[in-house]
Image 1: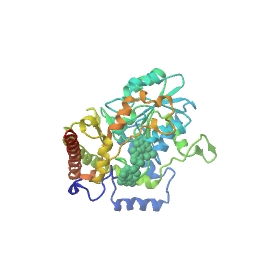
Image 2: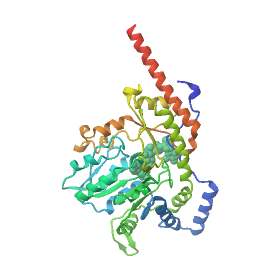
Image 3: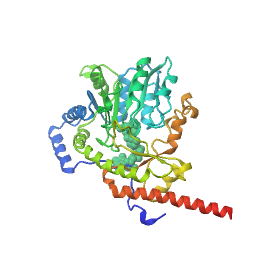
Image 4: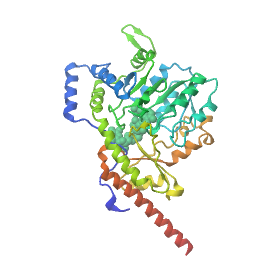
Length: 394
Ligand code: T4K
């Protein structure tokens, strides 16, 4: 380890944007004066309005977090209990848990090697009379093959839900990503490009879901005397909405700052043998949520796990999102669709992916140092194995 390269403070995979405290105080004052803290307050409603424009979608319903939003989306679609939902194993646990919490059965589909999202070519073979929906994830902000997925769904009369937790403000040919499928979920967790501390939203084009989601989000209450559905408490409160309104002013600049860091990473790392940088298609605007690289041990000289561990010694805490695959989790590993031979592409991806730190205040100097450390780790390891080889042959 080269001590002079080590960061004094830990560098994590992300850091949230934060509005100026004076601006937060002003919003808090308004909340304090109104004494309206939650249950569809003014800031909540204003945020829903504003998000429609930012996400370029017809309808938005905000929630207290992305998981509850996704749970509610699946409930709103009224999929038959016990029916099967085809999804990707390369995601955060919340995606798959939401299927199970709704009394539905997850069926894992392999992923595409390039976009790392659910592979439309492998979906049809998983469809049977009990299949009710496809749940795709725009993982790391890479869009699923939305057109192909929709044509399969149309052919078999299936619903389509997208987990767009990583795809805030992503567009395909200038179209908001939340316009695809029946319902999409965006997460506004503190670790996201855009956040409300905790929070999330659903976007959808069909107006029939406006009331349905409104009731489901609020215990199923329609009015003081009528409870019309089996709802949950999914309401976003006014403090979350206040932060959300302020962060709407900041996220574009944050994206710009991240873009600079990302292009520095690309310039430095693309020539390294064994490092692949998945590329966003040219017609897609990048959400800048993550910077993911793939490490091929054979050519890089050390594995993703070894690099991950070595980086820690330099105080750089990368993340192996999304290892292990959801299909390897305790509740899902016995499913037929979890068999390794059905998920060969996803299994390879999970062993190679590494998310490097990506947030505006990281700055290009620190990003450069991270690249230098990666090169240093690799060279040191390569020299060591060369030395060992020499000794063995001596
Ligand atoms: N679907 C997908 C595909 C998702 O990725 C997620 C969430 C969801 C659904 C569910 O949405 P939500 O219900 O969360 O809205 C984090 C987030 O907690 C989670 O929201 C996110 N995905 C997931 C990918 O990442 P962890 O367990 O990695 O978080 P944690 O606490 O290790 O934080 C990561 C790093 O972020 C820390 O090392 C430092 C930094 N950090 C974190 C927090 C919480 C901060 O700087 N400040 C903070 O306040 O899950």
